Image (cartoon, rainbow, N blue to C red; front, top):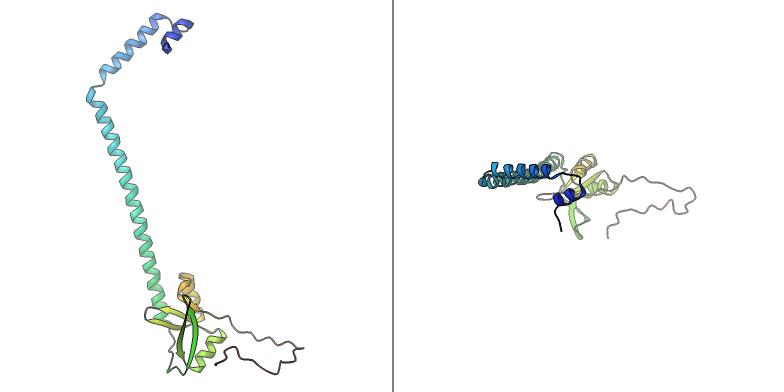
Length: 178
């Protein structure tokens, strides 16, 4: 197979004088570049590429560190909200049962707190030392930051009585104690 230069000569697109001139220029350029310079350019390119990779790794590590710092800040905010707004459980003459990670847990609260929990006025949140009771607005703030901390948040109880209900006079409590 003939080279491109030979094909152009045969087609008459380039004359032999022009082809020799191109070949001569090509040899001059090859002599002008020292043999070690190609290796230097390659080494520079590898160094530039290694630097770019290092910068990208550093950025990724920085992103991960920022994410960890943000999670710690959110955890600190949640802890502060719980500590500042916790409701004292009292002596605990009645137990309130709820689910946490698929297990039934029980905390002892006063009868008044039990009623408020049932009616949705207070909520149960997970704290470092166990479980705490907080008002609903605080539970909402906590769930905005991390919803997994709020364990029990009942909706406000609105009692609707149907006019035609034959059992309207017989109130059935939502929190039967067995």
